[in-house]
Image 1: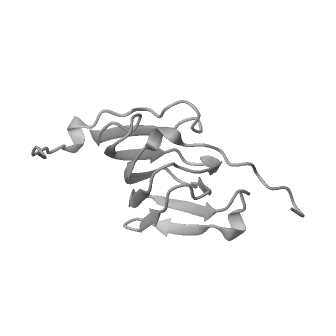
Image 2: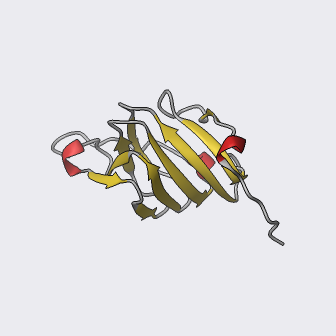
Image 3: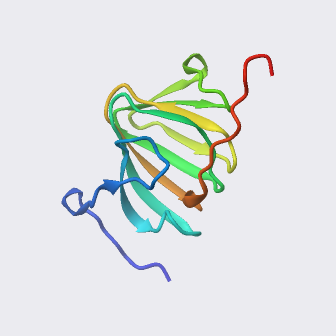
Length: 130
């Protein structure tokens, strides 16, 4: 059975993201545990100038930009020209095992709902001409 739970901004506990993520990323877990199998919801805070290289997640992810803007692209090669700018209040669903990359120009906060976050992995990056 689902329990009622409310979290106000003053109750958020920001911590450094799990190892293997770009420096400066923090998260505040709202429910569940992103490091084990199962459903979770969390806020993720990206610093200005963050560059997240291509990676994929084992579970489907639902992302909403809460503040700032996130630039997101798909594929195994980081290419800003193929990315999309997602301003505040944008929402995206990313299927499991979809190679993706992201960057920020300003501090950005997103909400992430998903499953199996702990299995983030970097795909083999393609070289030009492959």
